[in-house]
Length: 336
Ligand code: FAD
Ligand code: NAP
Image (cartoon, rainbow, N blue to C red; front, side, top):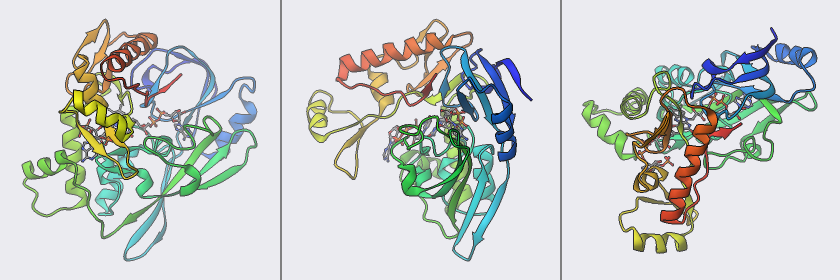
């Protein structure tokens, strides 16, 4: 069903009250194709998943299409691995829990990330040392310009740190329809992130399992991250900066305690949350918005903030980090 001037307030996790000029939901490729014929062809198409990685700074002058394609399908299975395809409109965490309950390893560290399966390749979602690229096989996507369905294998997605081809050169060109993952029945566990080990200890876990790790991640996240249903947010607002060893060497002279994570390619990843905290923004509120008290990387809407207020706050934070550390933070959240 086509709607005009449709409120997206309940469909974005910042809770921003913006309208889509035109709006519809689809739950199959056929419905999507039909909407492309009936819908307002003069408007650009904007695909919406769970709205958890978006900042709307204005009304959306687009034909907004909410992807609600559901379903899981096991494509192949043997004693070692399971290849499973999920509809793009599935809720990511529900898909993760389905795989965890089966005992299949690979996605457990990515528990409780909001949003849809279809958006997961967009920024190669990651947490606690795991990214979807580690288990990703392929995806199929509808090409808006030609109406064809294309398959993207791992290489074609050009995954990077919170990046993919869909966030860069092919931005806005495709509607992801389904995503396929290869999961392991005898998994290698990733518990190297300190917080996970500590939480497993607190839980009294002596034997690792995908479910124990998933539960540990859920507990850590629930204790630290604001629930968007209570406090509007889109998770980490900025990416962690990755800098050269030379730049890091000069920075560490002035800030010997700076947390740093050397990367395989010789660069060094810094924790954006720490930089923001040191710049004085942790827990700081300006009007209706601010940087969260428990994780300074999360920009929050205390209620009633507009998208442009949130945008301005992000600008002020970036300015202060730049002045203190000489580092330009990059926004992770998609801005409209
Ligand atoms: P949306 O916000 O709806 O869309 C994001 C972008 O993807 C938009 O550009 C949209 O047009 C596009 N898009 C969405 N679906 C499709 C599709 N089917 N086809 C084509 N384009 C599409 N992210 C992490 O990586 N790691 C985390 O640990 C993490 N933690 C978070 C914690 C909280 C509390 C919150 C609020 C967010 C967190 N995020 C995290 C960010 C966010 O949850 C993810 O980026 C998620 O994948 C976004 O999914 P979504 O369906 O909400 O996408
Ligand atoms: P944290 O554990 O307090 O760590 C702070 C930062 O240091 C993280 O950003 C992380 O980088 C980095 N880090 C910590 N231990 C590391 C290690 N052993 N090796 C490499 N890097 C390490 O972070 P947090 O805020 O509680 O978040 C926990 C995890 O959830 C992180 O992976 C984070 O990315 C993810 N998360 C993402 C979002 C989002 O919206 N994108 C929101 C909430 C949480 P990385 O971020 O690169 O992992």
